[in-house]
Structure formats: C-alpha cells, structure tokens
Length: 262
Image 1: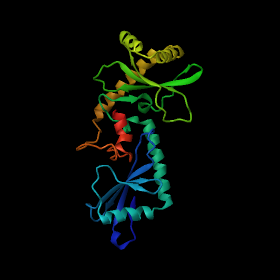
Image 2: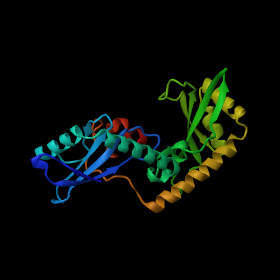
Image 3: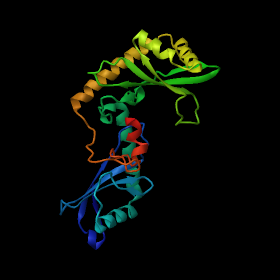
Image 4: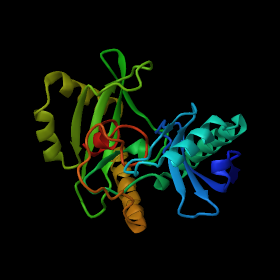
C-alpha cells in the first residue's frame, strides 16, 4: 500500500509494507512496518508498530536520524483506526497461516529440543494423567536434527492449573527409548517424581508407541527444515541479556530466544 505525508518535510510518497510473525504461540501483538521513499530509495524506515499505537526499534538497527524519527512519530500520530484494524486482521491471518504451516516460523537448530505442539500446533492428543487425585499433563520436546539418532525426549511434567499459563514444570525428565537407559534415568529420580512417572505410564499404556511416532514426525520435519536452509539471524558480537532479541519479537533477549536456546 502507499502512504503520503501531508507535512512539507515529508512530501514524498512512501510505499508501506507490513510483515508479521506467524508463530501461533507468540503473542507479540505488533507488525513490522517498512516505509520506502518512492523518490529517494535510500530513504528507508523499518520499525515495530505495536497495536497500542506505540513503536519499538528493530534489533541491531542503526539509530534513526531526527527526520526519520519525526516521520515515524507523525505516521503513528495520524494512523487511521481503519489501518490498525487492517493490521490486526492480517496479524490474525498470519497466525492462522502459521498454525497450518509451522515450517514458516520454525528454525533448524541442531541440538535444540522443540516442543511437540510448537512443531505440530494442530495435533490434539494431550498426554494428561491423574496423580494423587489431581489432573497433570506432560509436555514432550524433540531434537529435530535427522542426522542425530539420539533416541531420547525431553519431558516436563506439570500440574494442570487453568489460571496459570506460565507455570514451571514440577520436574524435567529425559525419556529414553532404550530400556536400559530409561531404567537408569528412573533410578535417579526422587521418590515422588518416580511415582508421577509411574502414574503417567499407567494412565497411557501405549505411551512408548505414541512417543516413538512423535519422534519420527519430529525428525521428518527436521529433514524439511534442513532443505530450506538455516533461517537463524547472523549476529555480530555479544548480545546482552537486556538487549532487544535479534529475532524481532520486540522482547528482551533474556525473555525470548535466550530461554529457548537454553
């Protein structure tokens, strides 16, 4: 779309392009706006426009000039409600697209374990179980590199609390397909944690088969991502924990990709 500023200093017409995060599990609530001067193509502006009509700079972006800052301020100040509504509509469409095509937001990172539902958001089979009269559930994460025949899964076991969406796991656990390795892992668990794992296996007798099938799907997805090639942004120098995350989410690095990489 095109956008024209009425101010004398901003007399040129700008081409407006909007970009969106497709990850349905990310509540970023912003759009990346790109403004390109149709007369002077070197005059380009990119920033994160939040839906509350505030803006944030993109990570690793050079400091804008005074004129560029004024252009962004005036753009947001005079932003029609209809355009915000359009951005929100496209944002929802992008999230719906990501739910259908997780490959649009997943990044191939060898050694990183990815939550199964982040890879396959349309799957509906929950791994829940009862323990001591309370509802619990298990989340499973997989290392997707098809070249690594690791044959293990990272698990997090949780108590179901509907009013707590960001609860930490009761404990984390590595599930091995090799029975001897699995028995060794179980032997190192605390008694209450071991009882919880037993309750999980008793509630889902075919757990081994379910996890094996999910493991194969994760590795197959890894093959597809390898064909696409790495989408990981190239970062020069050290990233401080409080710096904006290079992925463009608008969050601090310590609250975004740092957590996922760890």
